Length: 263
Image (cartoon, rainbow, N blue to C red; front, side):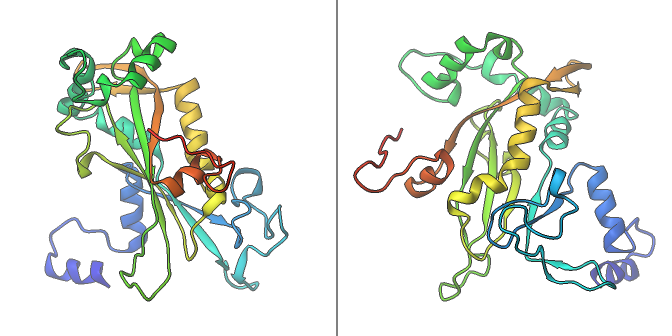
């Protein structure tokens, strides 16, 4: 409806004629997302070898709320996965952003005892000493991961919780790395209830891609140096409250044997 209205208002503009065409353009720019069906009880994703299944491989629950021979069916839950690789590659198409990804190595001033940027942290320096092959190229991406639940309806009386998984780009200068424009939405975990200990089920697509970027990397064009290089990426740490810490780490934070270690 909105696209038709815009087409009438701007007849000479290059506006997509339908939602499907608009989606194709977004995917072509690396801004699209993949819809992955999930089990009603968060047991598994209908992904990879389970993509064609109609029943959960773990609990046997039907994949569909409703389905007949005439329609495609309505799934119980849909995970929205925003592919990471196209977004990282797209950064290096910009000469200015490609230059900024080197800032932590080439322009960051290392003052002993002063922390201005994540590159000053002990964790960063330990990581460099453990993996010198990764640290050798300052263009390799270092990420932070954070998540928490929110109510998309903004109503206190309506108990609904969706969980975005957001990545931070720490290669960028200190005045850019924590700006909202530099964040990457990687997953949007559906509600109504929080995924709790099953959050690892929903993180499978992201973890698989991160493993691929760590082990194999991806050929990327650098507009600043005007060359193709092998881009690798790694998660340095996660940022979350104490309750989410238990879900992401797999450690219990409750009871007598609860793990209380924080940074």
